[in-house]
Length: 146
Image (tube, rainbow, N blue to C red; front, side):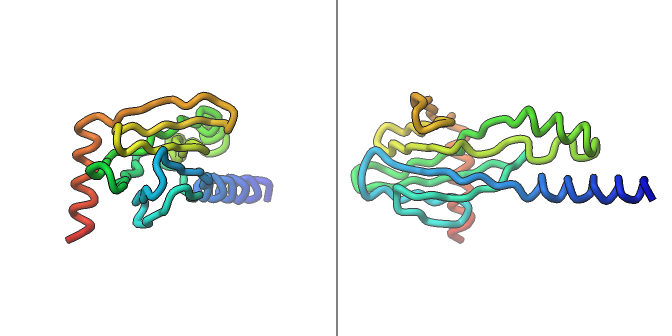
């Protein structure tokens, strides 16, 4: 009976951990910017819930009136505590949902920069997507358009 309970607990923990998602506030340096992520077009500023991931990425396309489209991949944070919990509770899930979105993003289409931070009071960290990341995101959106 004790083994069945432990197995049930581990299965429930794995399901709960797998269903985790985070809410991000995405803003822009310019009014009128629209960002596409996860099949949704968001007029910025917006709040978006995105699930944790280990191996996937969140490609985005941001558009405003004064610059060409800006493509990239959202920077994600590593969840070290999640890895420890996965190893302790359910070893086969050791690499499950180890990355999640940051709570705050700011997109600057004109300069091709995405900024992110953990807390509202933190200083922004700038990230300029690598050319291969931008190309990957552009290919992703071109394929979706067909």
